Image (cartoon, rainbow over all chains, first blue to last red):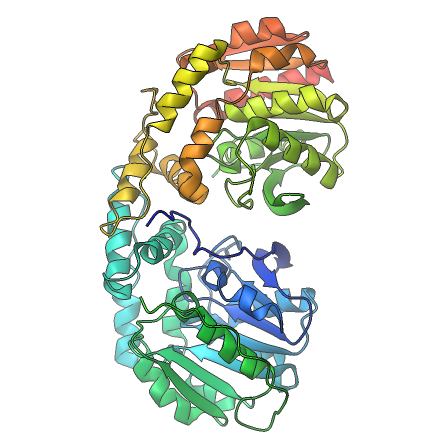
Length: 294
Length: 275
């Protein structure tokens, strides 16, 4: 494997900054017509997770993938904040970009953020949601994760933090994962060691159950069969008024990178209003799928 | 943390894609260009210092930092064309231009090729290759270096980290006592990606002595006495520049990162004298 890129291979989408309450918010954008689709990433990665998905959305939607404040190139808050705070800042960035009615997409921490963005924007602006691994935990798991999931690790002169970062991604994404994918995960973590725990811990402190129950729009839970949070999604679907659960077999997660075609075609289905529930619309042609099960 | 004006960031569109930059301060603009295989982080410590007296912009050359990967080769002349586009794209007007190592070669090339865009020039340790024989030897040496891609055991990360301590010419880079500077270096290498060898080889593509006489504006040459030999030829280069002064540092070649105050003071004093 020769690809040493910090982002997965694929056409790079135009990027930009928009002002936010805590500083600049960085994003990748694709497409100039069709419904708005906003995408939020899992901790501690960046909008680069959507590099393979954005070109697939571009023909039928106007897609904007955001770096959560403190991740990628978005500027951080001055101290740890909560999921509703992150969502408020990102919704402010969406307003400045002129995004009115939208479909929100998110994985893990990004799923909690997407749900909060939808609730804060109001039902009239939200067409649908596509979520992957909504962080629903028992109180015990929540406390345990806050204690131990994201330990403090500083850069060390001998580089031992690099080995730690690599081993971490081997553990949570699987040793058999493509080294380029592990490289992307580890580098995303290592490029933000100082504050990588902030959004993780915000997600562990936030209970999305009441949020999910309040949603009025169609919601697709699209999750990998072996995702760390697949059990949670299997339960969460019953909390939703208009919910659908769809599992992608054989994968451990990171659907935007491991199954971009399937991920994109499901987003387009929901962005067009073809999910369960009251909304209805035209079905776009499915995006070509060249997904690799690795 | 260094005090001083807050650093801002942005993108400029060029014919080869998006160019990313960071900047600090207001007033007459100074544009700084990093060395090969690095990024605008080269001037992370310098920006707030120079930003106190002028608008100081540090750009990521194409293929480095957060700028797009170019389809073309990483030649000094190509980088110079993109910098000229950025000067126009940001409507900076004629500006003071500076660079470090290969970035200084790019700055020199902009001043030689686009004289109307530059009012003053800061050349910090540009590569001064003397003769075709030396160039061929350097290119052969750089071409022989192995640049490992992602390995299943992650060992490529550690080998890139260690490159931050000493260069392939055994010149000291960054001190092991400063993990933050090493982390900057590490991320810069990672962001170049699979084209690191190509970028390293192209760094020696420029003939500084041949281009220097074309520079019409005042120039400050900064030189690290213990730097790699090609970058320590400040005296020889200054002699070929029509209006040059020389400022030597008693160190190897990481002046903007290791001596940001001295670097900023030397640049500031020069710009005040010359403008």
